[in-house]
Length: 92
Image 1 (tube, rainbow, N blue to C red):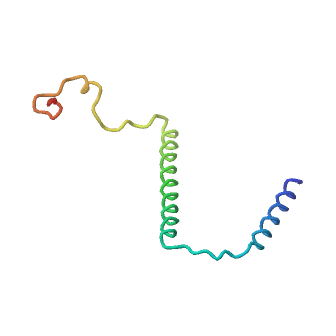
Image 2: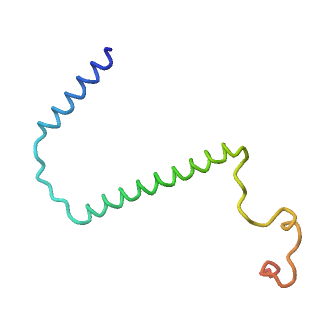
């Protein structure tokens, strides 16, 4: 109960301090607005990537198996030398 009382006092104190703050007579040029907009877009992109990553981890947890490996060469294909018409056969 005391924590709620302390939190209420802190909230009232912070809001009252914000209410008594003097007005700032500052100039924000267009590049500052562009910088703020870029930061906001970056935050949204970061949040979207984090949600995507966690979603795939959560999906694989319920499927019961690890994530599938991306399509590529198998171990057997990697051990064989490239055929004589492949780009991999050219060495510099």
